Length: 335
Ligand code: ATP
Ligand code: FE2
Image (cartoon, rainbow, N blue to C red; front, side):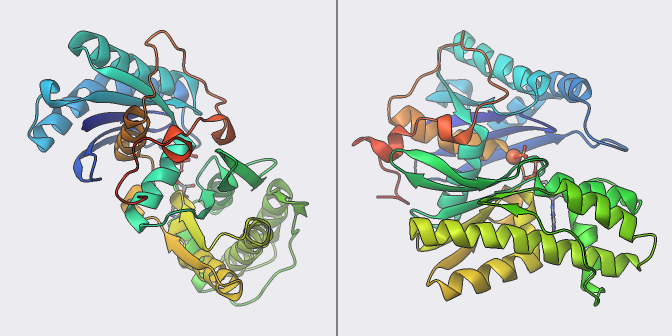
């Protein structure tokens, strides 16, 4: 089976093509890079509709196949920004109807998890999903990916990006903040907010921006990372104790952070669990993760009607996972 997947939940229009052994046949990406501030949904949708068709053509060329060789078309049906989501959905519905291909809509968060599992060869990990908009601790239990802790306000990546903006660092600020933090030595007292198994970053953000008036930026960056990552690690540890998983899988763009990886490794090791990190290239939004998750879904008999609307608020714990719960297809990395 060969599946083409379209990602378009936020700032990236991604087209991926995979086969059922998990081989990546194509990976094309069109990324909106805003000059300042956050992304404007309408700008993203405009870029996607101008460039999306060409990206699909390039992906087929790269894979060396035609539409007739595809067994299905997958797209990210949510969560995300409405205008971005709709451009990807329209492209996928068109391909499905025009070329008679089965269509499946997949959850964007589930796709981050499934591509992470495929590429790290993990089977049943506790997933720490740290992207721009999302911060969630997730594990498979009782037929669903359950959320064991999450942010109550902003995502960890957006938090770091907002802090970076106060320093004049353009989006995405994560890598530059990490670099700066390496030069910091003094831990500044900033708010640490863990509420039960959930987290909040807005108090820390306000205090960190204020601290820039009195402290060197490298010390503030260092403290921001130490405190924010300790919060995430604490919540992850609690979920690990509860679920007794033996693997910890870091996914999403912030997973690239070396200091975060180190803190997670130390914590997980003490609990006898091994830590895995999604390869950097596939930490960010991409079409390959949608294609792979779509393939798992299609193989298990899942279908989506072209009439089904996108769901900007589709939570990861609402997604059905027939490839994990059913008796049907098991991909080679899970069988
Ligand atoms: P989603 O739609 O799933 O929320 P996203 O596009 O917002 O995804 P990703 O592409 O997964 O997020 O990740 C982007 C985020 O990762 C940005 O906020 C960026 O600053 C952050 N990031 C990237 N590299 C690093 C790093 N080395 N340290 C910390 N943060 C990082
Ligand atoms: Fe994402």
